[in-house]
Image (tube, rainbow, N blue to C red; front, side, top):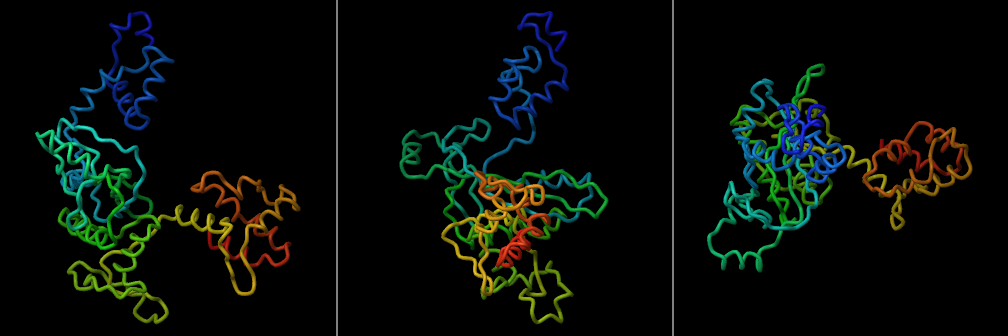
Length: 347
């Protein structure tokens, strides 16, 4: 940067390490972050037109709806990883359609599903009439669905970074059966790469919840046939337990994201139209309000924004309202036992 200060803008030069840093900054922060830094620190990082050839020269070009199993095998090979967990989640995006020159496809339309998987390169055409029909008849994606593979190691070993297996736009019109078919195919195709998927993790969407219950036989009569799969495993600790409602033979297990569960439980406690009856008492946020108003903050450390956070996914407030200090002070408040038990369940 110092050497660039004595030259005009046309003569700025950058080392490869600076270009790599700028590329990472663009991927993680976007165009606005890069332009903001360039405007405020002249000569610090190269411009976006200078970075574009380097970004487009990557041999791992991502195509919407294509699952990168071959690249996954190359990725895990240096780590000698044999087991992994697969995470799946959706997030909202700005609906728009654009043209991808490298795949010769239009990106942004909702790809049709086949056996739970999106059909890649579906929206490729040389006809303006067909493109017009797509705009009139096909939904534009307002969510992006992402599949992440996280390798697992023994305690004390360094885990590899997560791997992006696939991503695609969706209009959220799919069923629990689509999810289940997708999971079993991901499992089989990863096994073909000598990587066993031990389980799948996702959020509390009702379709994912049903797919989880059906796959593990947890209060579900849906027959998956997973116990007859050649790669199933047996949970030996469940052989003599009549109280645990889980089949001893499983192909994989399903877990919900712990942070997501905690925030969901916290939000349910805060909901005004929800009655949480536990025995003869109620778990209620009113006891936390009473604690904040009548007890010393030194003892519990809570403020009103911890009880009513603006961000419903604020995990820090879950930690604070279920801390030992809060639980100890709640013991002094009459009829708050149900609230104490509920907060202990949260964290």
